[in-house]
Image 1 (cartoon, rainbow, N blue to C red):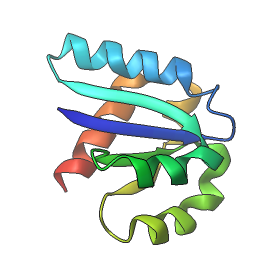
Image 2: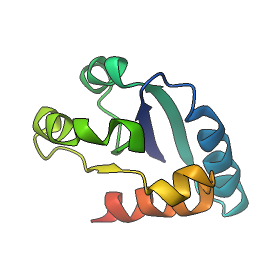
Image 3: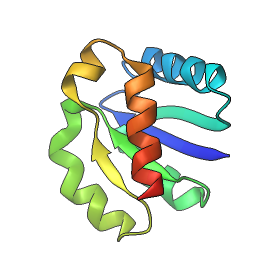
Image 4: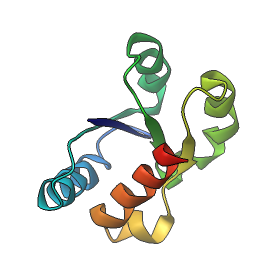
Length: 104
C-alpha cells in the first residue's frame, strides 16, 4: 500500500486529479491511498501521519518546494506535478510519477 499526498493552494483543484489517480491505480491493481489537502494543511499532515510515501505539489504552489523539502528532511520524496499532466488531469501519468519517486 502506497500513500500519496497532493497539496495545492486550496486542496480543491487537486480533488479531480486524485479521483483520476485512484481510477488509474484501481485499473492497474495498485493499492494506494491518494488524497489531497491545502498547502497550509500539508505541514500538519506530514507531522500527524508517518505513512505518507510521497508529497506532490500542484504547479500553483511550486514555489513551496524548497520549504517542503526542508520539512521532510529527506524522509520522503517531494516533487511538483508536471504542469501538462496537471492541466490535462492525467491521473495515470501523475500516479506513475509518484510511484517512480517512491521507488527511488
